[in-house]
Amino acid sequence: MRKFNVLIVDDDELAILGLEEGIDWESLEIGKVYKCHSKDTAIRMMKMYPVDILITDIEMPNGNGLELIRWVREFAPKVRAVFYTGHAEFTYAQEALRFGVEDYVLKPIPYEELEAILLRIEKKILLEEKTISLSEFAEADAEETTEELVAQVKKLIAENLSAPNLQRDELAAMVHVSPGYLGRIFKKETGLALTDYITKRRIAVAKQLLTKTSLSITGISERVGISYSSYFTKLFKEQVGLTPQEFRQRNK
Image 1 (cartoon, rainbow, N blue to C red):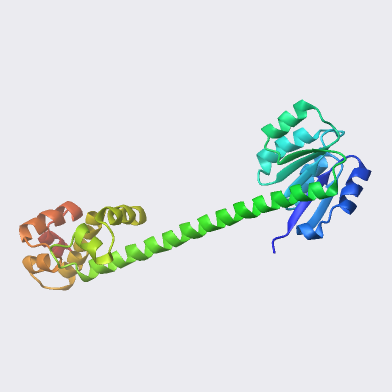
Image 2 (cartoon, rainbow, N blue to C red; image 1 turned 90 degrees about the horizontal axis):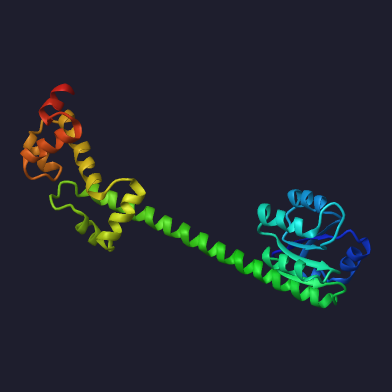
């Protein structure tokens, strides 16, 4: 079960003691209740400890609760805040709303009402964490599926490199996705358009055949799925900077 940590900030020790003893923290799944008496100490504590919910007074010495909330919004935006104060000034309430405070309650508030507020905040945190978790899972699953699909396509290309009709549409049909989708994810994963990848694989295999076999240029051209040796020679020179014959001669 997820446990929540709460920080109470109030320069009135009796107010803190009242919350400590009056709230049923255990039933709210609160793991830790931290407490302090000033804005600066609260900031230090939030840097040191994981805090989920902040309950703070407004008027305190050496910095008020509004300044504390401004710091929270900038440096600890996941912390949920509640103002628990004896000041009913409208300007304070306006500022609280502007900074996204979860609630603005006046002392003394019945403890069961504050418990209800804390329970609502906990449910909100849990829902957001679940949403984020599901989103991350979906992204990871999609990424894994994409990687598997691209790996499958690369394997099909290697196995069918001699087929002259090895094109995007045929490969897409083999893996049961649309040609457009296959083209997009392949480019995203490899940085190469599918046709460019096929061409590079054909040239790579042709290089091996030129250096390790005595096959004719026409035979090599057919082995890598290019029907016309003249086109193969032109393509090879574009990619390598040498004709197949020149490359073979240099790499004997």
